[in-house]
Image 1 (cartoon, one colour):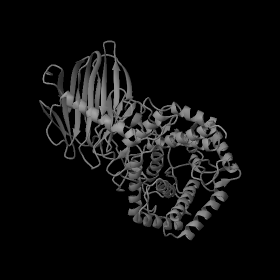
Image 2 (cartoon, helix red, strand yellow; image 1 turned 180 degrees about the horizontal axis):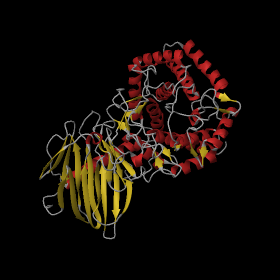
Image 3 (tube, helix red, strand yellow; image 1 turned 135 degrees about the vertical axis):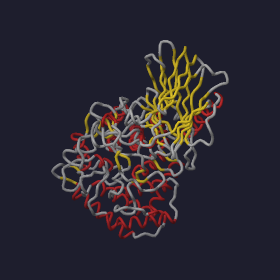
Image 4 (cartoon, helix red, strand yellow; image 1 turned 30 degrees about the vertical axis):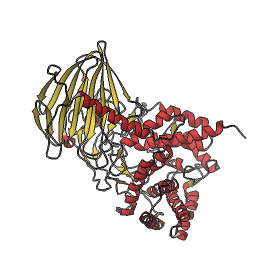
Length: 612
């Protein structure tokens, strides 16, 4: 069992895959060649059998600090002792837009004061620890090989380095020790499917890799148009989202990890290394608001391709999630030989919820495409035909039970949020057709939109609770409904909405943190409980700001910022202890953070503006 907390990690990546680096200097998670490929390093889920790439100071106790180079995805882990200060600089040079199995993890070691010795342990465990490897070692480096993947270890050396480093081999792993004095820089590059054998890399080439990668990230961040109160926070969220984007297709993974628990020791341990229609839709909206039009355009294209393909299970034209390349084979299985994060089992790969019926995804898709269209990312003829066919399907199928946004496994219900977003789908489709002069069955769409609205107001509203509820006939509150005023279904000052918000204040909010719903009141087919959902807390901030409760919104937002890890990253949930739990970092949380910050910023500016 690993003892390293989920939040004690930073994220690096090359826009096709990513790695988690702990504050102790260990790469505890890395899948190759893609986000959704089998793991090579998986110590985060099983410290004994998962594999790792560790760098740590030799022998003595040290204090560690971790930070990013400003405006980049280059991570620095600093080790401080009485006799010296050393740094590990971790990054992955961008891999480009063509799919490739060739990826590089760069680990630069440098001593900045006194002297420091480093111990490097390279212990890969291919295919979730199920595939043995062959080790080939020579004077220039090492190769870890399987039939499916090879990792080549390139040392960073200068010609006079004979006495600096010492290597030994143990049961297929490589262990290196190196002693550095102030000003010295050495390190390693671990390369997958390298074109040639191991080679010695000079420090100058090493430094050039660092400079080129830094320039890439700083140039990308410079595109941001946001200048508000929380600029650095939003930029870190944007960089994190970029790191979780598969450059060849534009698909955004929900998280780069699998199996991290929603309750430590429980069974709510899911695989998030896929692209959800919902997340992709939110990303278009959030990144356009920050000024990242290229990423938004690529996400829009990815989404339009999924709409056009019409590859769906029983859920109709769209699946709820796909692999980053757009394929939809996500068969769920368990890794039985892994112990799981702090004993949280099973460790799942694949996702059995992929064929669920979740009607809200159609509204999220149409809402983002509508927003993108207004921002100049217009929909072509083929795209419109696919949208029209999708809405024609929805007109015949919206009025049925479904699994809902939270992917419950306790049976279908007529979830109110699914109806809300179905209303959004028709509303945005009607507007797109009208504004662009596109052919459409406007009469059918309008009748469906109006019928959904009336149904929500009649059946989604519970007069006893004086609130909109999770599904028709229930008394359970659900924080997904915080988006009702955001999407325009109800005015933020409407008495029905303000009453709902007050009910959520009392039942779902605890010290500014928000639960998605109460599992004991609404069984979801799974054992155990869960923490508060960080996504929902940021949605709550957005709802408070729109309702005019700006002081409450700002205090909640500022409190929530204190739950980020030391680098500004968020997992899916916050436990009662205040620790981060669930897959990490989570895209949806960072998307909601961006939206909440911009909405709150604009509302605060309006309040501060002098009255004419």
